[in-house]
Image (cartoon, rainbow, N blue to C red; front, top):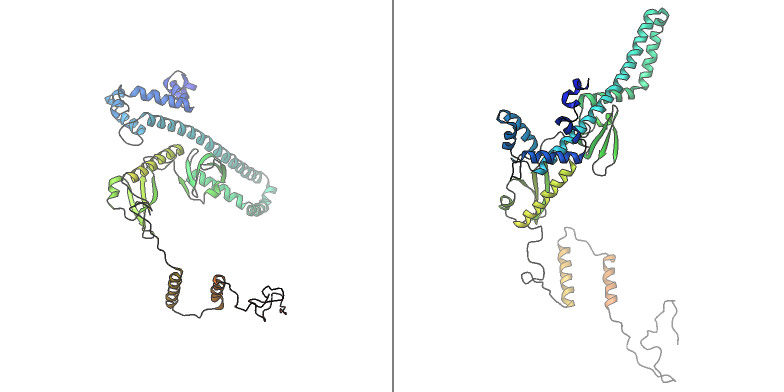
Length: 407
Protein backbone atom coordinates (compact mmCIF):
# COMPACT_ATOMS: atom_id res chain seq x y z
CA UNK A 1 0.00 0.00 0.00
CA UNK A 2 2.81 2.42 0.84
CA UNK A 3 4.57 1.80 -2.45
CA UNK A 4 1.33 2.51 -4.31
CA UNK A 5 0.92 5.89 -2.61
CA UNK A 6 4.45 7.28 -2.48
CA UNK A 7 6.04 5.08 -5.12
CA UNK A 8 8.82 2.54 -4.96
CA UNK A 9 11.46 5.18 -4.17
CA UNK A 10 9.50 6.55 -1.20
CA UNK A 11 9.12 3.11 0.38
CA UNK A 12 12.85 2.37 0.08
CA UNK A 13 14.76 4.20 2.87
CA UNK A 14 18.07 3.85 1.02
CA UNK A 15 16.90 5.42 -2.23
CA UNK A 16 18.15 8.83 -3.35
CA UNK A 17 14.69 10.35 -2.96
CA UNK A 18 14.36 9.17 0.65
CA UNK A 19 17.88 10.35 1.51
CA UNK A 20 17.23 13.82 0.09
CA UNK A 21 13.84 14.14 1.80
CA UNK A 22 15.34 13.15 5.14
CA UNK A 23 18.25 15.57 4.71
CA UNK A 24 15.84 18.46 4.09
CA UNK A 25 14.28 18.05 7.54
CA UNK A 26 17.13 19.78 9.43
CA UNK A 27 19.21 22.82 8.58
CA UNK A 28 22.61 21.22 9.20
CA UNK A 29 21.83 18.24 7.01
CA UNK A 30 20.39 20.56 4.36
CA UNK A 31 23.61 22.57 4.22
CA UNK A 32 25.62 19.34 4.04
CA UNK A 33 23.45 18.17 1.14
CA UNK A 34 24.02 21.47 -0.69
CA UNK A 35 27.80 21.18 -0.28
CA UNK A 36 27.72 17.57 -1.50
CA UNK A 37 25.74 18.52 -4.62
CA UNK A 38 27.94 21.52 -5.39
CA UNK A 39 31.17 19.58 -5.03
CA UNK A 40 29.78 16.76 -7.18
CA UNK A 41 28.79 19.08 -10.04
CA UNK A 42 31.67 21.59 -10.07
CA UNK A 43 34.60 20.64 -12.25
CA UNK A 44 37.98 20.26 -10.61
CA UNK A 45 39.92 23.51 -10.42
CA UNK A 46 36.85 25.77 -10.62
CA UNK A 47 35.24 27.81 -7.87
CA UNK A 48 31.73 28.10 -9.36
CA UNK A 49 29.09 25.93 -11.01
CA UNK A 50 28.17 26.71 -14.63
CA UNK A 51 25.37 25.59 -16.88
CA UNK A 52 27.77 23.55 -19.02
CA UNK A 53 28.68 21.45 -15.97
CA UNK A 54 25.06 20.43 -15.42
CA UNK A 55 24.54 19.69 -19.13
CA UNK A 56 27.66 17.54 -19.11
CA UNK A 57 26.35 15.50 -16.16
CA UNK A 58 22.74 15.12 -17.35
CA UNK A 59 23.59 14.67 -21.00
CA UNK A 60 22.97 16.74 -24.12
CA UNK A 61 19.50 15.17 -24.61
CA UNK A 62 18.34 16.81 -21.34
CA UNK A 63 19.44 20.36 -22.13
CA UNK A 64 16.08 21.96 -21.30
CA UNK A 65 15.99 20.26 -17.92
CA UNK A 66 19.56 21.39 -17.21
CA UNK A 67 18.69 24.98 -18.13
CA UNK A 68 15.70 24.90 -15.80
CA UNK A 69 17.80 23.52 -12.94
CA UNK A 70 20.52 26.11 -13.46
CA UNK A 71 18.04 29.00 -13.61
CA UNK A 72 16.61 27.82 -10.30
CA UNK A 73 20.04 27.67 -8.67
CA UNK A 74 21.31 30.93 -10.19
CA UNK A 75 18.97 33.25 -8.27
CA UNK A 76 20.99 36.41 -8.97
CA UNK A 77 21.30 35.63 -12.71
CA UNK A 78 25.03 36.29 -12.88
CA UNK A 79 25.87 33.19 -14.93
CA UNK A 80 27.44 31.04 -12.20
CA UNK A 81 26.52 29.45 -8.88
CA UNK A 82 28.88 29.76 -5.94
CA UNK A 83 28.88 27.51 -2.90
CA UNK A 84 27.09 30.14 -0.81
CA UNK A 85 24.38 30.52 -3.44
CA UNK A 86 23.95 26.75 -3.59
CA UNK A 87 23.55 26.50 0.18
CA UNK A 88 21.15 29.44 0.24
CA UNK A 89 18.97 27.96 -2.51
CA UNK A 90 18.78 24.47 -0.98
CA UNK A 91 18.01 25.89 2.49
CA UNK A 92 15.27 28.05 0.98
CA UNK A 93 13.79 24.99 -0.79
CA UNK A 94 13.76 23.10 2.52
CA UNK A 95 12.07 26.03 4.27
CA UNK A 96 9.41 26.36 1.57
CA UNK A 97 8.81 22.61 1.69
CA UNK A 98 8.16 22.73 5.44
CA UNK A 99 5.98 25.82 5.08
CA UNK A 100 3.96 24.15 2.32
CA UNK A 101 3.39 21.09 4.51
CA UNK A 102 2.22 23.27 7.42
CA UNK A 103 0.00 25.30 5.11
CA UNK A 104 -1.65 22.17 3.74
CA UNK A 105 -2.23 20.93 7.30
CA UNK A 106 -3.81 24.24 8.40
CA UNK A 107 -6.02 24.45 5.31
CA UNK A 108 -7.10 20.86 5.86
CA UNK A 109 -8.07 21.68 9.45
CA UNK A 110 -10.03 24.74 8.29
CA UNK A 111 -11.86 22.70 5.65
CA UNK A 112 -12.63 20.08 8.28
CA UNK A 113 -14.17 22.69 10.60
CA UNK A 114 -16.21 24.12 7.74
CA UNK A 115 -17.34 20.63 6.75
CA UNK A 116 -18.52 19.89 10.30
CA UNK A 117 -20.42 23.15 10.53
CA UNK A 118 -22.17 22.62 7.21
CA UNK A 119 -22.91 19.00 8.15
CA UNK A 120 -24.72 20.17 11.28
CA UNK A 121 -26.80 22.61 9.24
CA UNK A 122 -27.66 19.91 6.70
CA UNK A 123 -28.65 17.46 9.44
CA UNK A 124 -30.95 20.02 11.07
CA UNK A 125 -32.59 20.88 7.75
CA UNK A 126 -33.07 17.21 6.82
CA UNK A 127 -34.54 16.46 10.25
CA UNK A 128 -37.05 19.30 9.93
CA UNK A 129 -38.06 18.24 6.43
CA UNK A 130 -38.36 14.61 7.50
CA UNK A 131 -40.52 15.53 10.52
CA UNK A 132 -42.76 17.80 8.47
CA UNK A 133 -43.20 15.10 5.83
CA UNK A 134 -44.27 12.35 8.23
CA UNK A 135 -46.01 14.44 10.92
CA UNK A 136 -48.94 16.66 10.01
CA UNK A 137 -48.90 18.30 13.43
CA UNK A 138 -45.26 19.34 13.10
CA UNK A 139 -45.98 21.00 9.77
CA UNK A 140 -48.32 23.44 11.53
CA UNK A 141 -45.47 24.68 13.69
CA UNK A 142 -43.03 25.29 10.81
CA UNK A 143 -44.23 28.87 10.38
CA UNK A 144 -43.72 29.55 14.09
CA UNK A 145 -40.28 27.92 14.03
CA UNK A 146 -39.34 29.96 10.98
CA UNK A 147 -40.30 33.17 12.79
CA UNK A 148 -38.18 32.18 15.79
CA UNK A 149 -35.22 31.37 13.56
CA UNK A 150 -35.57 34.75 11.85
CA UNK A 151 -35.54 36.47 15.28
CA UNK A 152 -32.45 34.53 16.34
CA UNK A 153 -30.69 35.41 13.07
CA UNK A 154 -30.65 39.09 14.05
CA UNK A 155 -28.77 38.22 17.24
CA UNK A 156 -26.33 36.02 15.34
CA UNK A 157 -25.89 38.35 12.37
CA UNK A 158 -22.40 39.45 13.45
CA UNK A 159 -21.22 35.88 13.97
CA UNK A 160 -22.66 34.76 10.64
CA UNK A 161 -21.04 37.71 8.88
CA UNK A 162 -17.66 36.91 10.45
CA UNK A 163 -17.97 33.25 9.49
CA UNK A 164 -18.90 33.90 5.88
CA UNK A 165 -16.33 36.70 5.53
CA UNK A 166 -13.59 34.46 6.92
CA UNK A 167 -14.51 31.68 4.51
CA UNK A 168 -14.35 34.03 1.53
CA UNK A 169 -11.07 35.54 2.77
CA UNK A 170 -9.40 32.17 3.36
CA UNK A 171 -10.65 30.07 0.43
CA UNK A 172 -11.41 32.66 -2.27
CA UNK A 173 -8.97 35.54 -1.76
CA UNK A 174 -6.24 33.44 -0.06
CA UNK A 175 -3.71 36.30 0.31
CA UNK A 176 -1.01 34.28 2.11
CA UNK A 177 0.16 30.82 3.13
CA UNK A 178 1.96 29.54 6.20
CA UNK A 179 5.58 30.75 6.21
CA UNK A 180 4.95 33.75 3.95
CA UNK A 181 6.59 37.07 4.81
CA UNK A 182 3.84 39.73 4.69
CA UNK A 183 3.42 43.42 5.57
CA UNK A 184 0.05 44.23 7.15
CA UNK A 185 -0.52 47.94 7.70
CA UNK A 186 3.25 48.47 7.24
CA UNK A 187 4.06 45.96 10.00
CA UNK A 188 6.44 43.17 8.85
CA UNK A 189 5.21 39.74 9.98
CA UNK A 190 5.54 36.05 9.14
CA UNK A 191 2.51 33.75 8.93
CA UNK A 192 2.74 31.03 11.58
CA UNK A 193 -0.72 29.41 11.63
CA UNK A 194 -3.89 29.77 9.56
CA UNK A 195 -7.29 28.86 10.98
CA UNK A 196 -10.83 29.33 9.73
CA UNK A 197 -11.58 32.43 11.79
CA UNK A 198 -8.13 33.78 12.66
CA UNK A 199 -4.46 33.81 11.67
CA UNK A 200 -1.39 33.77 13.92
CA UNK A 201 1.57 35.93 12.87
CA UNK A 202 5.08 36.47 14.22
CA UNK A 203 6.42 40.02 14.02
CA UNK A 204 9.82 40.43 12.42
CA UNK A 205 10.95 43.44 14.46
CA UNK A 206 10.37 42.12 18.00
CA UNK A 207 9.46 38.41 17.48
CA UNK A 208 6.05 38.83 19.16
CA UNK A 209 3.11 36.55 18.34
CA UNK A 210 0.06 38.37 16.96
CA UNK A 211 -3.39 36.86 16.38
CA UNK A 212 -5.63 38.72 13.95
CA UNK A 213 -9.20 37.68 13.02
CA UNK A 214 -9.60 36.96 9.33
CA UNK A 215 -12.56 39.33 9.13
CA UNK A 216 -10.25 42.13 10.32
CA UNK A 217 -7.48 41.14 7.91
CA UNK A 218 -10.06 41.22 5.12
CA UNK A 219 -10.20 45.04 5.44
CA UNK A 220 -6.42 45.57 5.75
CA UNK A 221 -3.79 46.30 3.14
CA UNK A 222 -1.73 43.10 2.84
CA UNK A 223 1.60 43.03 1.00
CA UNK A 224 2.91 39.52 0.39
CA UNK A 225 6.70 39.72 0.13
CA UNK A 226 7.19 35.99 -0.45
CA UNK A 227 5.05 36.07 -3.59
CA UNK A 228 6.82 39.15 -4.95
CA UNK A 229 9.49 39.11 -7.62
CA UNK A 230 12.66 41.23 -7.60
CA UNK A 231 12.08 44.13 -5.21
CA UNK A 232 13.36 47.70 -5.21
CA UNK A 233 14.71 49.78 -2.35
CA UNK A 234 14.99 53.56 -2.16
CA UNK A 235 17.75 55.17 -0.09
CA UNK A 236 17.75 58.93 0.60
CA UNK A 237 20.93 60.86 1.31
CA UNK A 238 22.02 64.50 1.49
CA UNK A 239 25.20 65.77 -0.19
CA UNK A 240 26.98 69.07 -0.70
CA UNK A 241 25.31 71.44 -3.17
CA UNK A 242 28.62 71.97 -5.01
CA UNK A 243 28.66 68.34 -6.24
CA UNK A 244 28.95 68.03 -10.01
CA UNK A 245 26.24 66.15 -11.89
CA UNK A 246 28.92 64.05 -13.64
CA UNK A 247 29.63 62.21 -10.39
CA UNK A 248 26.57 60.03 -10.75
CA UNK A 249 28.07 58.28 -13.78
CA UNK A 250 31.40 57.94 -12.04
CA UNK A 251 30.34 55.90 -9.04
CA UNK A 252 26.83 54.50 -9.61
CA UNK A 253 26.33 53.73 -13.31
CA UNK A 254 23.82 50.92 -12.71
CA UNK A 255 21.63 52.69 -10.13
CA UNK A 256 18.78 55.15 -10.59
CA UNK A 257 19.60 58.49 -9.01
CA UNK A 258 17.02 61.27 -8.57
CA UNK A 259 17.40 64.75 -7.07
CA UNK A 260 14.42 65.29 -4.76
CA UNK A 261 15.05 68.83 -3.47
CA UNK A 262 17.70 71.47 -2.91
CA UNK A 263 16.89 71.95 0.78
CA UNK A 264 18.04 75.36 2.05
CA UNK A 265 20.17 76.03 -1.06
CA UNK A 266 23.17 74.53 0.75
CA UNK A 267 22.50 70.83 0.15
CA UNK A 268 21.05 68.38 -2.38
CA UNK A 269 18.68 65.61 -1.30
CA UNK A 270 19.17 62.52 -3.47
CA UNK A 271 17.27 59.26 -3.75
CA UNK A 272 19.09 56.11 -4.85
CA UNK A 273 16.86 53.32 -6.20
CA UNK A 274 18.35 49.83 -6.06
CA UNK A 275 16.77 46.69 -7.51
CA UNK A 276 17.43 43.51 -5.58
CA UNK A 277 17.65 40.26 -7.52
CA UNK A 278 15.26 38.51 -5.15
CA UNK A 279 12.48 39.36 -2.71
CA UNK A 280 12.81 39.96 1.02
CA UNK A 281 11.12 36.82 2.30
CA UNK A 282 14.38 35.75 3.97
CA UNK A 283 15.01 38.47 6.56
CA UNK A 284 18.59 37.40 7.37
CA UNK A 285 19.56 37.37 3.70
CA UNK A 286 17.89 40.74 3.13
CA UNK A 287 19.72 42.32 6.08
CA UNK A 288 23.09 40.91 4.94
CA UNK A 289 22.63 42.17 1.39
CA UNK A 290 21.51 45.60 2.56
CA UNK A 291 24.53 45.91 4.85
CA UNK A 292 26.81 45.13 1.92
CA UNK A 293 24.96 47.68 -0.21
CA UNK A 294 25.29 50.46 2.38
CA UNK A 295 29.00 49.75 2.88
CA UNK A 296 29.56 49.82 -0.90
CA UNK A 297 27.59 53.08 -1.16
CA UNK A 298 29.68 54.76 1.56
CA UNK A 299 32.89 53.51 -0.06
CA UNK A 300 31.78 54.90 -3.43
CA UNK A 301 30.89 58.30 -1.94
CA UNK A 302 34.32 58.51 -0.32
CA UNK A 303 36.13 57.35 -3.44
CA UNK A 304 34.67 60.02 -5.76
CA UNK A 305 34.68 61.95 -3.31
CA UNK A 306 31.25 63.44 -2.46
CA UNK A 307 31.01 65.53 0.70
CA UNK A 308 28.19 66.02 3.15
CA UNK A 309 26.58 69.48 3.55
CA UNK A 310 28.95 71.94 5.19
CA UNK A 311 32.05 69.80 4.70
CA UNK A 312 34.60 69.44 1.93
CA UNK A 313 36.45 72.65 2.73
CA UNK A 314 39.41 73.34 4.98
CA UNK A 315 38.84 73.04 8.69
CA UNK A 316 38.36 76.15 10.77
CA UNK A 317 41.68 77.49 12.04
CA UNK A 318 43.80 76.02 9.26
CA UNK A 319 45.93 78.35 7.10
CA UNK A 320 43.44 77.96 4.24
CA UNK A 321 40.54 78.90 6.54
CA UNK A 322 41.89 81.18 9.27
CA UNK A 323 39.74 82.77 11.94
CA UNK A 324 39.50 86.55 12.50
CA UNK A 325 38.32 88.68 15.39
CA UNK A 326 37.60 92.44 15.53
CA UNK A 327 38.05 94.49 18.70
CA UNK A 328 36.14 97.76 19.11
CA UNK A 329 35.46 100.04 22.01
CA UNK A 330 32.32 99.96 24.08
CA UNK A 331 31.14 103.32 22.76
CA UNK A 332 31.43 102.10 19.17
CA UNK A 333 29.50 98.92 19.98
CA UNK A 334 26.69 100.88 21.65
CA UNK A 335 26.54 103.30 18.75
CA UNK A 336 26.37 100.45 16.21
CA UNK A 337 23.65 98.75 18.25
CA UNK A 338 21.62 101.92 18.48
CA UNK A 339 21.99 102.47 14.73
CA UNK A 340 20.81 98.94 14.00
CA UNK A 341 17.77 99.33 16.28
CA UNK A 342 16.89 102.60 14.57
CA UNK A 343 17.15 101.08 11.08
CA UNK A 344 15.09 98.10 12.20
CA UNK A 345 12.36 100.34 13.59
CA UNK A 346 12.36 102.43 10.39
CA UNK A 347 11.60 99.36 8.27
CA UNK A 348 8.34 98.66 10.10
CA UNK A 349 5.18 99.44 8.17
CA UNK A 350 3.49 100.79 11.28
CA UNK A 351 5.68 102.70 13.69
CA UNK A 352 4.92 102.33 17.38
CA UNK A 353 5.88 104.45 20.33
CA UNK A 354 8.25 102.93 22.87
CA UNK A 355 6.52 101.52 25.89
CA UNK A 356 7.52 101.85 29.49
CA UNK A 357 8.39 98.20 29.58
CA UNK A 358 10.85 98.75 26.69
CA UNK A 359 12.68 101.49 28.61
CA UNK A 360 12.84 99.55 31.88
CA UNK A 361 15.71 97.23 30.86
CA UNK A 362 17.74 100.21 29.63
CA UNK A 363 17.15 102.02 32.91
CA UNK A 364 18.22 98.98 34.92
CA UNK A 365 21.32 98.58 32.78
CA UNK A 366 22.21 102.26 33.19
CA UNK A 367 21.74 101.99 36.93
CA UNK A 368 23.99 98.95 37.15
CA UNK A 369 26.71 100.47 34.96
CA UNK A 370 26.65 103.86 36.63
CA UNK A 371 29.46 104.59 39.08
CA UNK A 372 28.49 105.19 42.66
CA UNK A 373 29.79 108.38 44.20
CA UNK A 374 29.24 110.56 47.23
CA UNK A 375 27.99 114.10 47.06
CA UNK A 376 30.71 116.64 47.81
CA UNK A 377 30.35 118.04 51.28
CA UNK A 378 32.52 119.90 53.70
CA UNK A 379 34.07 117.89 56.39
CA UNK A 380 32.89 119.36 59.64
CA UNK A 381 34.96 118.66 62.67
CA UNK A 382 33.34 117.33 65.75
CA UNK A 383 34.39 117.39 69.30
CA UNK A 384 36.14 114.06 68.82
CA UNK A 385 38.06 115.33 65.84
CA UNK A 386 36.53 112.74 63.43
CA UNK A 387 34.63 113.60 60.29
CA UNK A 388 30.93 114.17 60.60
CA UNK A 389 28.60 111.24 59.98
CA UNK A 390 26.62 113.42 57.54
CA UNK A 391 29.44 113.39 55.01
CA UNK A 392 27.93 113.03 51.55
CA UNK A 393 24.36 112.52 52.83
CA UNK A 394 21.37 114.51 51.83
CA UNK A 395 19.62 115.96 54.85
CA UNK A 396 16.30 115.11 53.18
CA UNK A 397 17.36 111.44 52.53
CA UNK A 398 15.11 108.75 53.91
CA UNK A 399 16.15 105.21 54.61
CA UNK A 400 14.25 102.06 53.63
CA UNK A 401 12.04 102.28 56.73
CA UNK A 402 10.85 105.75 55.76
CA UNK A 403 12.54 107.47 58.73
CA UNK A 404 14.19 110.83 58.31
CA UNK A 405 17.62 111.26 59.74
CA UNK A 406 17.92 113.95 62.40
CA UNK A 407 21.05 115.21 64.06
